[in-house]
Image (cartoon, rainbow, N blue to C red; front, top):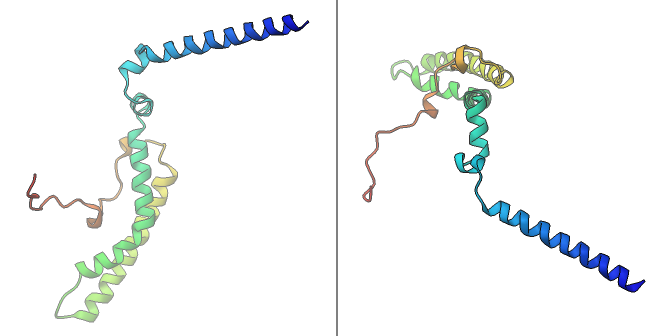
Length: 143
């Protein structure tokens, strides 16, 4: 009886080692799918053209959460040294209106990010000045 259990155990151990070694060899050899693509996420994004949809989602979230930035931007834009009070209230009114519009558009783009509307996921509103990259800078000494 004891020899039968020992034989079954050895056969099980041998099968486990054989399967383990064969799977390790298979992982070492590159196949066509991993050699052609560097990353599965990039492959899926390219195959299904998901990049514009996620760009629309990011734009919608930034507009929804950053719509209030229109208020200080428009106060600064409408500021006139000769009419401080009037320009402040004018800038505030313009900023509140544009901020509500930007927040609404952001919510719309966030909810409908997977739909290609407007045409090819185009932005509805222009980018705020706060989010535009300023490329006018002096190069660093080591560049």
